[in-house]
Structures are given as structure tokens and as C-alpha cells.
Length: 354
Ligand code: ATP
Ligand code: MG
Image (cartoon, rainbow, N blue to C red):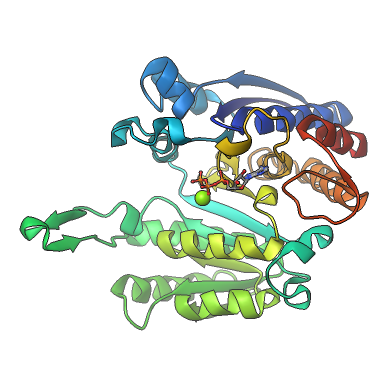
């Protein structure tokens, strides 16, 4: 199959990890007889430096033409003092909005070799493997007006959703549950929030279309606790924007490493933007030691969700798992024994396994 992929390396370690993931995609293409072509475009701080805009028009246009987008990371201290429209993060918010990417998928899977680095007890996190489905374009982060009033003595943030916005993300949750363990946890705050009451009604309605899926409703405060005390009870969790933001950062602790977590931001038709969950790590940029595995796993999600290449996605995931179990790791991973490798070297190991 022939596909075109836009690469948005961004800032900090972004270019290094995206280059690694591109090598992995090439290895998969030659192993499975596909051809991928790539176009690289500027976003974030790099785009501000070059075009005075965190999301240049040509970048936006290229993403719209592509079959999928792979992003590294944006941001860094260099642009921290910029006015808000010239902040690197603005480029990311704008591209998500412009491409209509409303479903954020974050798998949280613990690799056995890394679990000892989790601050949680090994027996609690061992076997945890869950998927958080977060709404990405509505709720508190986009409600209007968000402002200070009465000479700064009071503030307003609005949590607004339409039925349609809730329906589509809840469906994404059910669809994800169908291809996993057919167990869906819907997270809300229905004892307090009107938006959550409507959310719960829609979940109940949709459940009728998915009779094979068992559904449980958990209040967000209880979900936060259970994620730490008994994470293996969860498979797919679906929730609104801010709850998902908080819970997915919390869940990342289960795996023992930020450098291992991929993510996908999707639209209904399967188009998506894929990126590691970690940031641009400016403290280690350019040193050749960044961990590229989260970006490789994001590339695996790209193959699975945008190109319908499940076998090819599994090739990458298995190769990453094999690389770790063979004792290879990067500096950020707290592994006692084994061989510490740089970005390029560990990429070669993963390619060998592919
Ligand atoms: P953001 O605000 O963009 O989410 P952040 O403040 O959460 O960023 P990160 O950039 O993710 O921070 O980095 C947090 C720490 O983890 C840093 O010390 C960084 O060096 C380290 N780190 C993050 N990602 C990686 C990686 N892929 N490889 C190695 N170290 C990493
Ligand atoms: Mg962060």
C-alpha cells in the first residue's frame, strides 16, 4: 500500500525521536511491501523561529493533504516568554482543532522490565494494560467566555458540550472496547455536574448498540483513586477533556516511564495525528540520548488506526518489547542491568527485531 505521512519534528528532542520512528516505519514498509513517503514541516518553536507563526499555513495545508501525521514535541524555555499567540503549544492546539481531532487515545501498558521503576508496588501495577479515551476539543478548556470579572475579584470558566460532541467520543470508547476486553469504564461527575448527567444518559443509550460490552460508571474522584490502588480492573476508560487530561497523566505513573507512552488524536474517518505523550525534553536535546520508543509506539498506532495495518503495528510493538526484554534500554529508563544505548543505537536494535 502507498501512503503519505507528514512529519512534524518540532522542538527539543522532537527531531531525534521522529527520525527514529521514520526509520522504524521504513523497516516495516520494506518488511511488508508498503511504500510510505514523507514530507517534513515546521511546527512549534521551530516554526516561530522560521516563520514567526507556531502553525504556518503550509504546515496546516500539508497535514490536510496527508494520510496521517507524526509529531515529535513542541516547546522549550526559548519561547516561554512569548505572547500567547507565539507560544509553541499554540501550534499544537491549532492543528488539532483545524484537523477536527476530537478523540485522544492513550494506551498505558507496563513493560515488565520497567515496572520496578514505578513508585507503586510491583504487584499492583503488574499486568496493568489500559486505554484512556479522552475528549479533546470541548469542555472547560474551550468554554467561552473564560475570563476575570469584577476587577479581577471573580472568574468564569464554562464547561460546555453538545450532545453530538459527547456521542462521538462515547462511541469511540465503545468501539475501542469492542476490539479489546469488551469492558468500558465511563468516568464522570454525575452526582454534581449537569454535563456529566447528560454524559451518563448518552452512555446508557449507546450501550444498547453494544450489547457485548459491559459498562460501568465511575465518578472521577473514585476513578483517580482506583487507578492507583487497583489499575488492573480497568481496560478502556472514556471521559471528557479535563478529566481525561488529569487521569492520563496519573496513569502514566503505572508504567514507570514517561518515555514509553504513545498517543493518537483521531477524527471519525480514522485520520489522525500521533505523538509521544512526553514533552520536548530540552534538557537532553541534541545529545543523542533521547528515548525514541514512545514515538515508535505512536507510529505503530498510526499504522493501526489510520492505515488499518494491525499486523504491521504489532510488528513494531513486539520489536519494542523484545528490545527491552533483551536488556537494551535508554538512559531515562530505570533498568538495573542490561545495556544502555543512545537514540540511534536502540533504533537499530528495534529494526533488527522487526
Ligand atoms: P511538556 O510541558 O511538553 O509536557 P514536560 O514539562 O512534561 O513537557 P518533558 O519534556 O516531558 O517535560 O520532560 C520531563 C523529563 O523527562 C525531563 O527531564 C526529560 O529529559 C525527560 N524525558 C521526557 N521524554 C524523554 C525521552 N523521550 N527520553 C528521555 N528523557 C525524556
Ligand atoms: Mg507535561
